[in-house]
Amino acid sequence: MKILFLSDGFPPHIRGGAEVASFNLAQGLREKGHSVFVITATEDKDKVGESEYKGLKLFTLYSKYHPFFSSYFSLYNPQTVGKIKKIIKKISPDIVHAQNIHHDISFYSLKMAKKHSKGVFLTANDTMLFSYGKYDGFIDKKDLSVQCNFNYKVNMWKQFKIAGKRYNPFKNIMIRHYLKYVDKIFTITNVLKKALADNKITNVETIHYGTDMKPFVVMEDIEKFKNKYNLENKKIIFFGGRLGELKGGAMAVRILKYIVTKVPNAIILIAGTGSDYGEYMKHIAKDLGIENHLIFTGWINRTEMSVAYASCDVCITPSLYFDAFNLFNLEAMATGKPIVGTCFGGTPEVIEDGATGYVVNPFNINMMGDKIIGLLQDENKANKFGENGRKRAIEKFNMSLQVSKTLDWYNKVVN
Image (tube, rainbow, N blue to C red; front, side, top):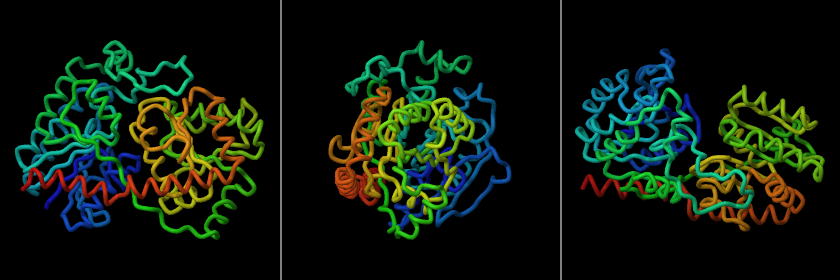
């Protein structure tokens, strides 16, 4: 089959969780013998054009506009739709599979895809089909228990407060209209499927992210990594991904303050982008007197990321919003590391509480801190959780399973 991916961002230029997951799926399909093409976008004119990346044919389009227009251009982007139509007609794909298209590619592309292909699919990687930005409107921040059973229906007034002048009262109506051109919507967790249903989006099937098991990391690599970042004789808490308030960056620093009172050699190792927010985290750490317990690597490549996982004692995902899956969870499990993660979003669906890690309310500093401390002090339990997590990743979240389920749906509309 000829399969065309639509994605606002894509490796090698963008390497967020959703982009990496899209690339992994595209590679898995290519390795099955299918021809895979990708239309993506950039604000850098030097990157515009046709290229090839690891066997995938990429068409990179230029798109840049003022954020004020985002709720309109997300529906129909005049900078890209004409070019997308020409490429789709040129390729004449059997399948068009949209990923994140809420900024540059735009939802109108689904209508064009339906006209020029046999089947159209869309993967919802987050809540952007019904919300403006990261969604936390369902959380009761005064309740410090492990919350569950939420109603995710968006509140229009809260959405207006988030969007401000960008608010478009017809945005969600038009998104649901364009979704009618999609044969099936995939979600990456069942909880995201429920969130979509709560906001009148149906025709949904869950296909979890998959990942390949990490390559073997030798002790020499770990030693070099620890020497490079001054990690010797430290208890290492690993926190990765795009840095930001709702990802729990500041909260992680406050939790660290609690942890070092009982584990003085504990540090948080941070591999992520977002330098301005990183400076903010450093400022908080300095005010709390724990600046020496915060270590940043900056952006690191996939090989060094594997070594970072292998070097740490425990991984954390303290997201303070609906974090639909968080690929960091899966990569940590695949590398055999225990996780202490948020109760908000898809993490409780990935982590098995009390078996591969712990599900906590990250607003509860003592709760999350105690679970991390317990794993840092009990190496046997941490190793057992890590072993259980790796088994779970192999059985439920392997790449071949994701590719197989996706192909089954493709075949239903093509044959």
